Image (tube, rainbow, N blue to C red; front, side, top):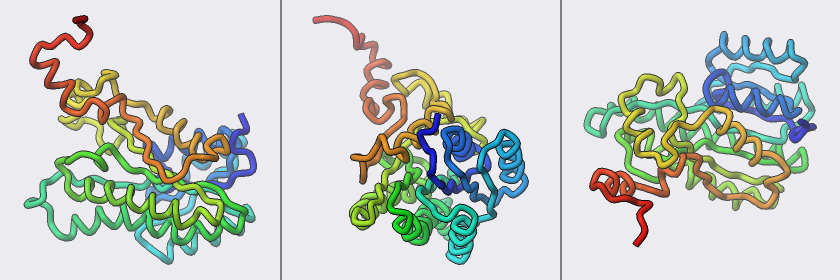
Length: 263
């Protein structure tokens, strides 16, 4: 306990899913956490629950595509806590249609939330982190940042998050701000529950299971903590070996090749 003592963290998309798990884990470790989301009832309920447990958690309405919304959020958090030390750019949406079937409006919406929202978050929060003496940012990417996916807007936006993360890590190093991205595999949340791709994906994952919300939150906690003080500009997969194995493992298994057999 106390690994995030004296830290003030903004978590976008913090009302449910991975973001909610981040809020719970970070506040458990002593951070003051600002939940930023458009899901007002869920965000307010989560904040009330954690406040009742003695944690410093408050909810703020935020559309991550709104530059003025970001300005207001930073002002509100600094007014309440006196500083901001950390940012988790977690908010994201999916579309699940191919290139031909994706309208321009849907393309722009998913790029806006998943990529522009990350850009705006760092643009407006990092100066406040600098003023606090430095800190850390974690951006939510995906295994789709590295492989083709049947959702072009999601794939393009998450690949963009990696490029933006590396650029920000270099830009903000003189401000004593570390910037990293995490690339989750399948973690079942309300965003993907019931999807037909889940079971095939599980079978293609070497560990043979989905990741948990707690596991994702633990990685975010580590990267924001002082324990990760020499890590910046990285994208870290948390995917049960999915990217490491690629298609090769699935092909070997379907071909009947015993991967554990000796010579």
